[in-house]
Image (cartoon, rainbow, N blue to C red; front, side, top):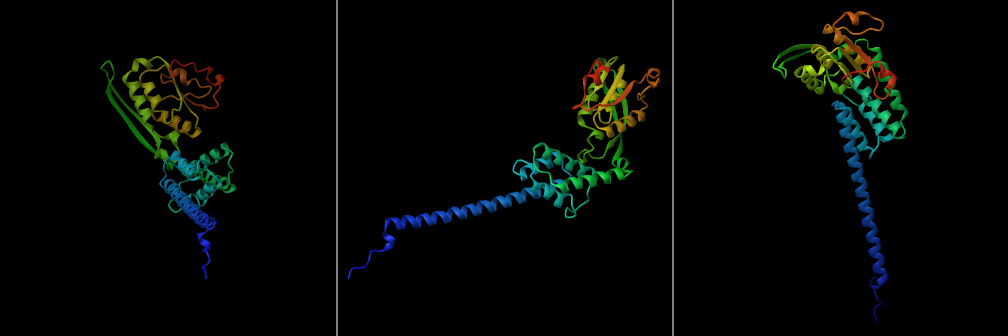
Length: 288
């Protein structure tokens, strides 16, 4: 008796078996890829938490938040920040200024990109803002007094000797950037003191004056008028205090003191984004 022809030898059976095997491989590869994606996102979220707890620069934290969300700060990432970075599970000391700055920028970016902002993020931001305003010693506790000394020759070989006394933020990464001493202001101050003739007897207008170091140097070289501006109200308050600490006259509205004093320094609030021609019309500076 003849043996039956094996079913497995039929061409269509082999094709079916190969098809099933191929589908299994695809499913296995898809599962592996999905697992890898989850592991990668967990790793990115961990980096985000560590950057927040280490108080890295806000731009760095936002970049990590975007990367964890695949290009935008998604509700999932927002929820992670709320629960693991600012919430009770975060661990470490919570810094009110830093957390407020990070939350403010995350909310602003999510709103700008039309992403959903979870309610908890608004509530947490409100709590940090309330905590910040209720702490009366907050601003004093985060300031340090510095003396910046300049001792160098000018371009015409005259000796410059100046000490500027300033109240500054302890750490610019905590969000209080307007009250921080930036390297750029040190370089600009050196340039002013090295080339005083460029600025002498000129009306000088500075954008983003911060702690006011450049204003002290402009006054020293004999600028006819110094207008210092900043878009941060707390920076303006600190700037005025610094001018007074250096025995400079700060212009007050309706005051005759400016005309009677050789030190002609004005501290003015000016937001770059909202400044109009009328805001600048009375300044008419020689140098900006």
